[in-house]
Image (cartoon, rainbow, N blue to C red):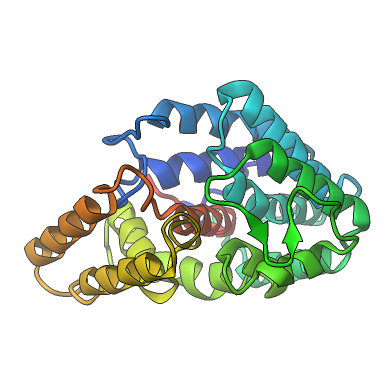
Length: 299
């Protein structure tokens, strides 16, 4: 398989978004399913809108400015929150890609990159956040108005931002899987999602199915944060139990897996879109971003 190395950070971000929400994942907006207040076209438009912010992302610009610019562009383009979690995850990844790109002029077109190098760059970027990053991230969250968000643990998002972004994320990490990536150097992305996608694709599983199977496995192991915020912990736990039933059938006959997948999709959509596993989708998008950078192709 030919590697896909010469995409810029902005291109990686847009392509990762398009790849993630084109896959027909249960409970999400995708190419065959819209919500009443959010469509596939909204998602695609936002994926393009964030490109310039990710392209400009550098250590000097910082995580906060990158997030704020991407959310501002999203609001200008679609006027709604389609991608806050994804943008929060992409910002340090994009900064790391742009930083590493300056050092990597000798990559051959077909060589694979080590995700560990990107992870180490992300770790250093997260360790160097400043008070301005925290302020601008909070401004971006207020601008996006994410569904179900009341308080970030002890820190109401409407109050003044803490001076330490990582401390703020630590306050939320127990109930927000995106925040937890900031406090664990993106452990879920690098240890679970990227290997999950790559291993499945290495076994000749079609790329879309690999994305869906990894998504379901993620839901099974981590109750979705957005479902928990909107519907409560018990519904989030139930979504994980239902996802586990699908995950258990991954290596059985395809018909059984598809039947249980359809049941999960039906249940997730049966209460409007309040049971939308949006945080799981955000994490999958970040995993696809890393996989694309490291050499995977999904076409």
